[in-house]
Image 1 (cartoon, helix red, strand yellow):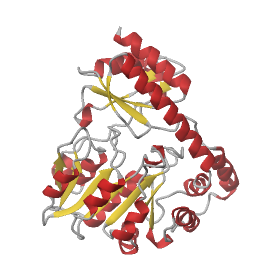
Image 2 (image 1 turned 180 degrees about the vertical axis):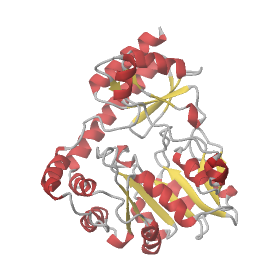
Image 3 (image 1 turned 30 degrees about the vertical axis):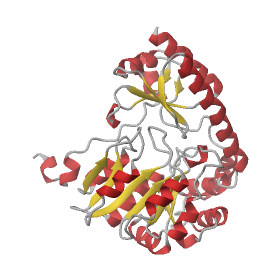
Amino acid sequence: MQYINIANEGVKSLSPYQAGKPIEELERELGIKNIVKLASNENPFGFPESAKQAIQKQLNDLTRYPDANGFELKQVIAQKFAVQPEQITLGNGSNDLLELIAHTFASEKDEIIYSQYAFIVYPLVTKAINAVSREIPAKNWGHDLDAFLQAINPNTKLIYIANPNNPTGNFLTEKEVDHFLAQVPEQVIVVLDEAYTEFTEEKERLNSFKLLQKYPNLIISRSLSKAYGLAGLRIGYAVSNPEIADLLNRVRQPFNCNVLALVSAVAVLQDDAFVEKVAENNRIEMARYEAFCQQHKLDYIQSKGNFITIDFKRPANEIYQALLYEGVIVRPIAGYGMPNHLRVSIGLPEENDKFFNALLKVLS
């Protein structure tokens, strides 16, 4: 029996999501120690102390189910961003929310719009539900919003926009997003994926929650995996108008956020000092990466995230493999249609130094 023959049509053409290589896997393969992983845009400062303390308090009460509605976390999010708790949907990471939105609003023959070189989960979830992909050619590696508008038709159900975009780091201004949303029909849901928003400069950051007041078809998705350092716990949140949030919460699994993730999220969302430390390191070290690339005549895409994507003008897999032998893990992105590029997460100064030295050795 070939069970692929009875699978959902969209699933038949899927390939599993390829995450960044784990440190432990490289240790097993090559016997290398002191490995630096700059592949998955993780927080280089490690797990926040505020989250550790919250977990310690919770450890004696893990036999009970978590609060399925996430009351306390929703209260913290609502207060921090001046929204209402009934606008919030909690997810097992923002990936969970991106998929949940598609399952809620789109099905076979509906069309989902996203950009070339955008987050790979968008095409994956589109195929999984057997919807129709409308991949819009990128403009300078980023979203071409005018082309998005031209692609909208009566079958369009969803539009995904990552801002900043992963893996290219491109950024849309609030004026650009506002102008775009004003022209999108109200029956088309727009998902603004802001997983990396904390790494943008405060003066340029979108006031996306204010945009919600103008556009009821907007959903804002955010992650606590990056700047907040909770990638291993998997938690994120979406904010939308209450009617949309109610629909998402009908489809959401009842206990999709575990209790340790919930208490950690409450703690770190109130830990502004930690997030600012992370963002400041990112600003300083991003400048070092840009200077390094300029000095060594390496083309790169200017990024507003916690990563930088470098163009080697030739297939980059050989460079990626050679860096592994130097104990440095970065991210090849041929799966995004960018075989000449490597995406490098911004680490601590000493981690970035190791990457610089390793790359120079490999290129020489």
